[in-house]
Length: 329
Image (cartoon, rainbow, N blue to C red; front, top):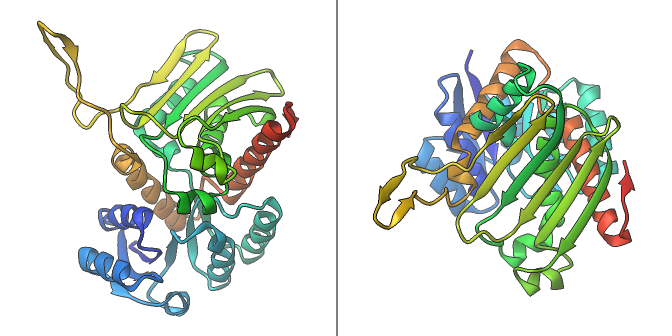
């Protein structure tokens, strides 16, 4: 079975997904739509697909599924449109910045029986997935504590910050999903602290650039998340899971994994410079999982409900910072 795709949005993440689709032998990128004509032309030329409007993709009989990479405030409306059009839907996180709007959107998905998968790509990173497998295999016993470090090389532009929904809903939301993935339980309490240490302009926009979060579950498991919009040494992505019988961790990845030793000491190449190179395999595996869900009829995962829970945790983190206390979820 070949799944025929329409891509909505030809920006940075759209290009990443276009590469993942065109690299998969079970997929075909049929068309792209973007409000910016040149962006659509560039992606079309790179991958040999047509340029169509969203309306045309919605009505097209030669498209089975769509990938939504448009601005966040369009996601929920587009999910509903394509669910009613009978298309399978892959949507970048978050579905919306408002929990109630997400709940309304998911009601339409359930009503139409549409396949919906939300883009929490880090579950599909082979290194992080190997840690989850070690947990499932019993290699470290019962999970007790999780540590997640996620730091960007640099802050995004002010225009992005103003539309992102804030660091907790834009950046930490990935780590909230990863925490659930590794803990195996849903957090019931969120304690967050946030500062502006990287760029004063971020604070002037009402956001933060340096945050720490502690999550706890009903059974007492804990997860500590550390986020920063600045890491001068590269894209810092690490996880550690401590269990009753041991520990599993996934260290930072490099484009070239070598170490040189000489009279000056030990040196290694720099880290990946951002998500587009660090998570190349994860994006490819993610699209493969989406295709498998379409082909087999199994429930797509991460699901819309996973997206809803991660957003609720992000909202709780925002409240925790503003109110200076632990928030019960």
